[in-house]
Length: 123
Image 1 (cartoon, rainbow, N blue to C red):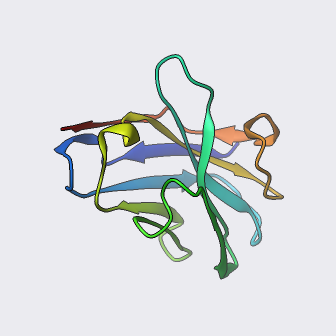
Image 2 (image 1 turned 45 degrees about the vertical axis):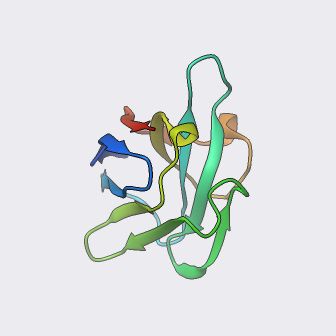
Image 3 (image 1 turned 90 degrees about the vertical axis):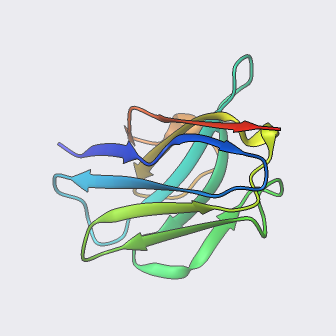
């Protein structure tokens, strides 16, 4: 059974930075799509960024985070990261990592999910 566990959330002022980590335990194939999603109160869960574990340069970013967020995956540590810079109040949300054999924009497709990490950005 694959388990995902996020860490690194917190509170920061606008313009600050945070790095989220997602530790993966259990068997996972060499190629897997791993992504970060977020959900703000009253809003639908949306994809933030995603990457295939075996092809580091094939990434996707939501337009709202391009140039500010960077997704990466460390195969040796089996850990997914999201470096978030120049944070804005509108980035405030519960952030989830997720995994599925194939990448998709649809959150419902993803098989495995972490419990979420809160990110709060104050103005």
